Length: 157
Image 1: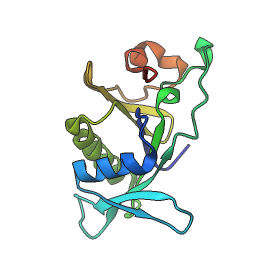
Image 2: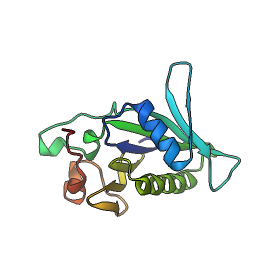
Image 3: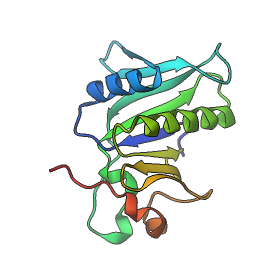
Image 4: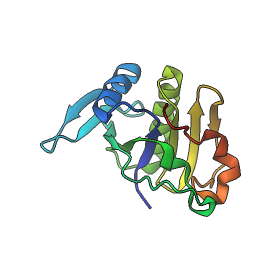
């Protein structure tokens, strides 16, 4: 299980363009590291001496499958944003991630999904269905297909 929260974003924009749009929409700063990794960050709203954010990249976790038992909601989203809190408190990290997700969905940039630790679906948004907060323990995998299937990202035309 991951100790990060993860935003999955459905866009054809490359990660650097997506990062610039997100930064502008929700008040974050874009930076790169020595390996050209792209990062978004800002002061935590719960404690301005700490930061939140993380790397944004192509969704390297996607393994699309036509086999229903192997499907995951996350496979249709092209961009992955790892989200952490420098204070190393998982409860605050999730609170900050929820706040950032709400801000992202209010900006109406692209369909998006918020997942805790890669195994718990927290929320999903698209312009047609709006925002849904899922019950605790909802999986983004085939086990809970009925709960999230309406949020499957449609291929870009």
